[in-house]
Length: 109
Length: 118
Image (cartoon, rainbow over all chains, first blue to last red):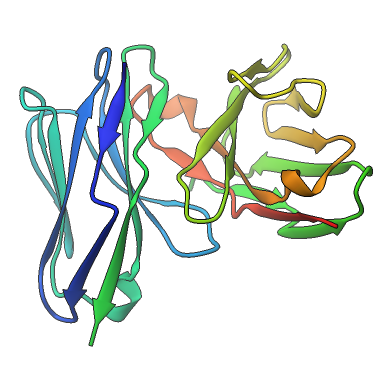
């Protein structure tokens, strides 16, 4: 079967750094996406990785290792507004998106 | 770019009535749109894939006669929840991908519609 695993909830302190991990097992791979979703709102696109390595975009970075079926989203200089759920999604061999359950990130002052 | 507009943002309806939700791609053409449903504290669940000019593809367990999808143009897909019941209350979100940007372009989401059936 196909599945994506990410922690259910994480807590971090304002100004700190947090890493949210995502592991996946899919039939084929055509890219991995990270989305941010605030409560009651639709997801917004954060990052995309299709090749191994680190993609940096401001305070957010995303890493991919295809051989390990592993990705992480790194958030630096955390702000209170970063409190949200972070969704990992993998595009499988048939180009269908497979979604993780999301990681709820709680930022404390 | 790549803006997806969804309307209405929220709707309250009585049990047994039907509700139509519209999803528009504002600055790109979308041959394919996706309809998701999300219950509180749960992840996105794909309901169906809407294909312009042809029938939608429904995921297992989703009733096609209850959730009617029409994708009449390259910029508009509609989802109609027919004979709504309280258990249909959920957050419905549409999404689309700008196909002109290649297969690796991300999904862009509408703002979602919160449906409450009383």
